[in-house]
Image (tube, rainbow, N blue to C red; front, side, top):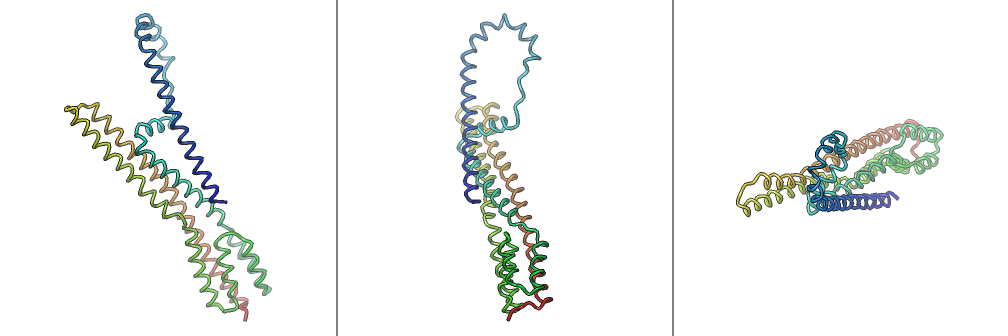
Length: 276
């Protein structure tokens, strides 16, 4: 189910991003066409409309662009060739991070309540009921305790060994996908820097072709080149925050799992519940 939700999220983000950017491109083209068609009429009527335009200049101030609109505009200026891989990295990384966050939040359980229920069954020497409590509880902590309780008949050493072994497996499951998020954190700025270098090379090619260091040529080329780096760094910063949150969540679950494992062994020893 979580994988299905992740795929739906990726598809939705890709569709939304594509539609938004294509709509912005169409809007820019329409506005450019309308501007070209009305240029001549504006010039012809400039003499008669100058006083009115001056009087209404304060009332007809252009509407301030929102942050999202500015972001779309800069994304389009950067060019699809280098912006699209960065966008794909962001969508994939965001989907992986959301899937991990959902999974880890589901895996988080009230450890104290779980241990209390297990202790009540251990005190009555009802190991089977304690196993059922662990089986019916989600999360790696309950799974590790279940493996420990299954080995009570082999003594405390076998319980500790089972807990350690299965705890390593659960750690691997919790860290699933983190390597790809880490890759995206490093890859997004690299793609941005690569686009910047290529853009700078193109800017110098334009200077060489024109034969003159015009501020317009240099500034325009460098601006477009640097946009890829900006977007790459933005993606990396967002993914770094999500990555750190996921790692802290895993550390919290791991600490609770270790504490619960130690408490389980103490409960079994205190109640002499190791089955022969």
